[in-house]
Image 1: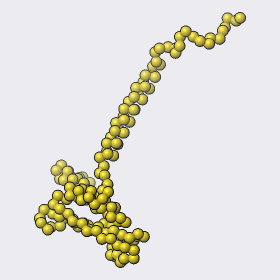
Image 2: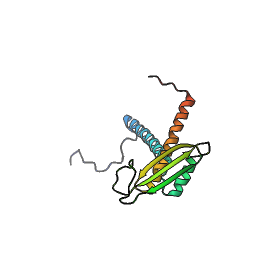
Image 3: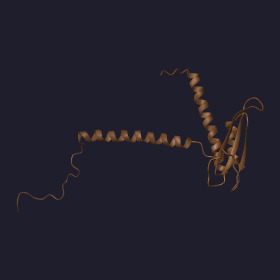
Length: 156
């Protein structure tokens, strides 16, 4: 036999117990990247769950609009059947339309703060559009109030 032999098994399995110098930095970088990714995922899921749920029926619309309009509100729904004459400002549609006119009352009794009309293909979508309109108004009011509180002067 020759002096050079084929080693099939060694008494030392796995080699050197110390990691390579660059390997530690790579592992720490991966841990940091995973931590940052976890924070972003957590924030995304938190914002997603904080979004307002859509209204599913007239009772939810009644509750939400009651919260968004502290001085009261009123809505009137008009259903147009096939071939019925619709107002001139109605959008073109291939299905019968639903018209929802709503008013938000002001602090003074009988004083109307906002009056709007929305068109939709279904009653539920008309109610959802009404709620979204009011939520948008509330968000804009909050932005205006924050800007007034901060006394921000915009420079052009």
